[in-house]
Length: 455
Image (spheres, rainbow, N blue to C red):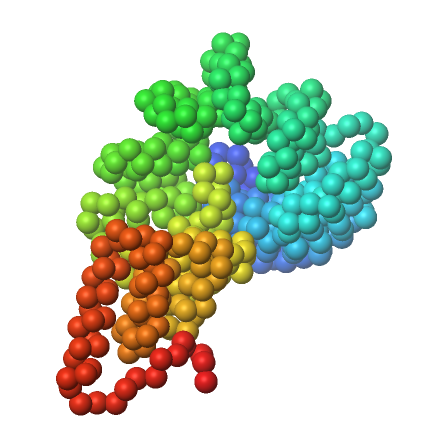
């Protein structure tokens, strides 16, 4: 038997293992085949699919990109590479792959839809819309995928009217396209039509009680309406039909956490992580549940794992749009201040400034001794929210601890003018008076009253 025949046998056995769900054996056989013929694009692509199914998305992406380079005339590796980059939120790389796919086939619906998603991820909604209209002009038939992708971007912009129009058009073209009803329900909720959304989903379930998408969408809606027992009932019914449904397990765990059923939350998050070991949102949820019952050391170890792998573990999910913000808050809760500061800065770089992100950054910076960073972040918050008591408190405390008593007095006065009953500021005022009195009595040099960074 020659080398090529042996490699083919390995590849054939890999396909059999993959079909039977034996992913580790499928991976082993494909690697054996590639060790004999490393330039076979199809085997790289199949290995990428196997790694993706195993939850190893970064490794899968490498294989898809390698397959695309080895077979530049094939579309499916380009589309797979683009889609995986979307999932990893590597928007610019996704855009590049989908552009390449579109150049290869100017009538590829998947390429246009992926390109719209990539532009939306980059925050360039004008280019996303231009691509949508280009697809409408280039494709022979209206595209459900492109309308759904366009709706996704419009939802991000809170353009509910146009988002609803795109979703209803997509449903008219392909009613079985995943997530359409869930997204339409979200739009209806955001436009104060929650009951209409529930009626729509209930009608779907009357026709087909086992519709997984409708069960999950209705559970999500019931969660938003704080009707948690009903949401749990829908999720449990869904999980009887599909025990491996990741989003259902995650939502069930999230509801348990928010309703303070911490043992149930821990159980559900651990179940998700047994099924999907690299699922970052569940690691964060589990850490929060562990913190809630006082298992601080266990939570800290888990957060350390998430922090070190945050490029992959802190991606947005359907249920958690800001995992880096959540990680920063949890790191602060376990006293990992340096890591919290780094995470908060990365979140600001990735998603832009917000008061909560700046407050996390300021608190982490002050705690870890980076007072200048804390000052700048707190001042930015106060420009956006002049009465922010947390920022005023941090600035007053930092001024007091560094011996800048006039500054401390100014911040305390400003804070009490906005929040006259704040006990923390009142206690700081007593500490300030005590320090001033001691300075008058005891010998020593007078401190310089200036902000960090001033000459």
